[in-house]
Length: 389
Image 1 (cartoon, rainbow, N blue to C red):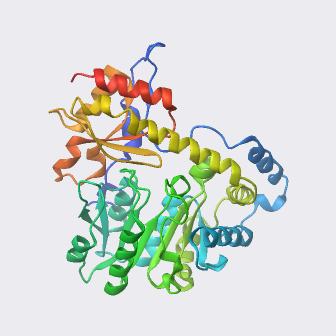
Image 2 (image 1 turned 45 degrees about the horizontal axis):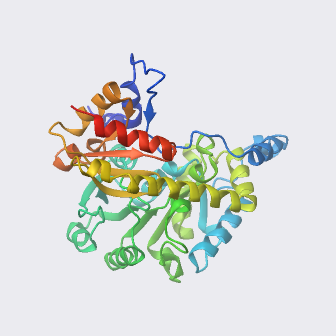
């Protein structure tokens, strides 16, 4: 008998952390941890103060609406309309306990046992894990050398059991930002096929392009096809408070509500209060956070020639991630473990982001650079350049 959880693999980030067991990193060469895309700094002081004050409100300690507090839903709708154009309303949003729960609730509302979801590869491993545990087949959608999926390739994979195409932009793990025209082409494909297009934009606030990342919400009928996922975790450093969101049609959200009520009853109150305060007060601060991430992104690209001469290749970079092809004969999972002990680097191998049968994963690694500054990026490249398997 195979249980739901036994149908999938162990959490990759937790597996990678176990590689650190028993290893002592000398003071002159401390660990460079580029394995996880989560802010390690606390929220800004003003937000922490607002959260402390929120705790004095008795309502902060009680159940709230299953789909989230109306004030946050309305504020997020206004912000989303301002960013993307078009019109979205608060009742088209559901607030969730993080963006992973947003994806889980979306899949629960769309699929039955044996249905299919198209996932571009390399994929975000938690998406694959949830599909496995839901009895839903993750159909690998190969990407080009630029890590962008092709709508024509996707069209050939759609079957009567296909329920959605799930895209992540800026991409995790690849870092690439999907061009607006590409997203529109996938929207058209999904609409023609009578399926949904799920667009996970967890890292939207760190997009390199100015203005709206895509035109999907300008379409008056966007809700018949598009489901947009978002997270406050990265934007306001609220990872521990689990606050995400789903934007979709009202009929769809009525199905989502059943899942959320059963799993969590309501999203955490403190996280919602913090997210609302952030929307209302932290635009300038968030712009500074974005500028710093873009500065680190430039450092990743500018420093690459040092590694390119040794056979490394940058396949994608953006938001929190750089995705590289390594030059060594050993597979990336073995390489990643050796980098810990020999170079003091903890990163994730491409094997964690692709199907077992896909040989490309053995040549790739993901670097989450958002928690290392430009000086540490230089040090990272120096260590990679000096590594010998």
